[in-house]
Length: 242
Image 1 (cartoon, one colour):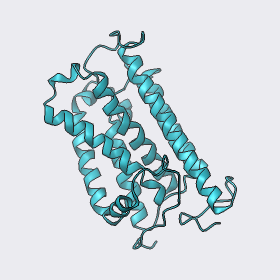
Image 2: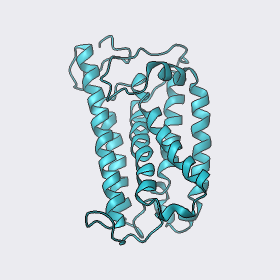
Image 3: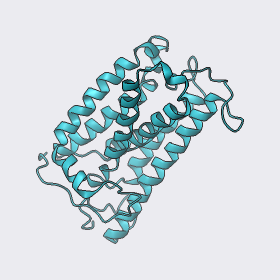
Image 4: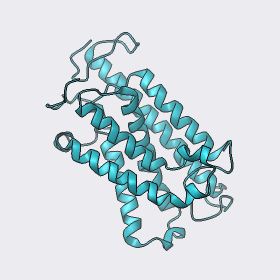
């Protein structure tokens, strides 16, 4: 295992797959250990933030409660693994899915229930809103360290698919395990949907978006490398072919 010292090449992906300017991507990769530390601090804060929901949730379902802290933990581990020269595609795919889904779902929910979140201190509201959008930004840098092999995307989809189901549809033990919202789930909201339907629609949409982005990145990298997308034709991260 060799520690990563240089920066991986940047494939010329379409803007919708790589919206972060190269200069910012490079800076984030150079400051990888700082990014890891920031995400670990965010993870610690997130577990503290969820302390009341942990207390109200059966212990067996705790892994499905702290969605955002788990996402920041995953990206910290993914970047650390890459930096140590041992990038794990399944871990990076999980980090990508988690940071896209939760990085968008939290601001979406904060806006959808803006009036009901009036109890939050304005500084806390702003912190939650912008820190989660920053999760999306860092997710869009991960294409520099992985090729999103299909099997790894399948692992990420399996975990976040199960998480989606137990959060909103089949909780298995107790009540649905989504992040607590400030109004009853059956409160009428938009277009005939209740509050639960609104947040479920948001997370479902963002899960599909993460799946599309990961697979589209995979396809574009394979097209550039001139290889197929099967398990026996993995392009290198630097785009130089099999």
